[in-house]
Length: 180
Image (tube, rainbow, N blue to C red; front, top):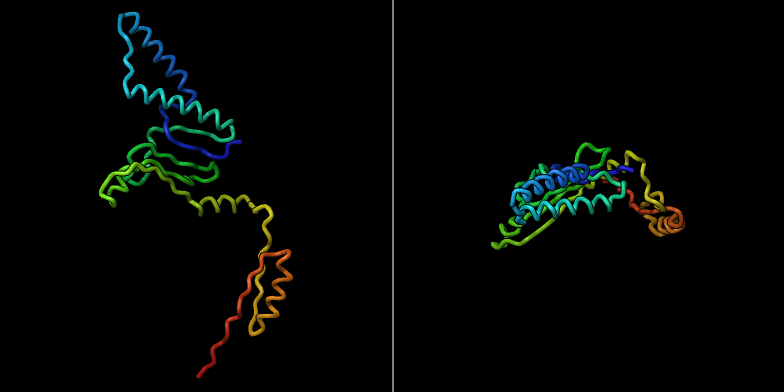
């Protein structure tokens, strides 16, 4: 079941990782054959770490989710300082959640940089998807409103009786204002 997409690093799509590893291995073998030796730089370590993360995410997804890594992803806010991500639904043509790293944002208010990661969820978009799917909360009761004017005691008694099978709300009837 493919129910969503997580974006974050297109140069290393899982199907391309093994090809990249093969090419990199071939180049390294050629260099070694000519007396060169690989020096692990921070950038190469980062690439290796990213490849490991991609493999782990693929294993965790277990074909329940479609995972897509896209290094070209850019979020609309300019305060992100590192990794960003988005979560999409295949039924909605836009992200339903997203976030990332924003180390400098808090510093604008505190006058000192604080490492930070955060995200936002588009609840209206998620509710729209759930509504389109006719999703019903398991065990949810139907809602009923009991209106009353002067007799709150009787209305409350009716509400208590209905409360066994329904979510009940009491509303006082608005009174009409007399003309002067």
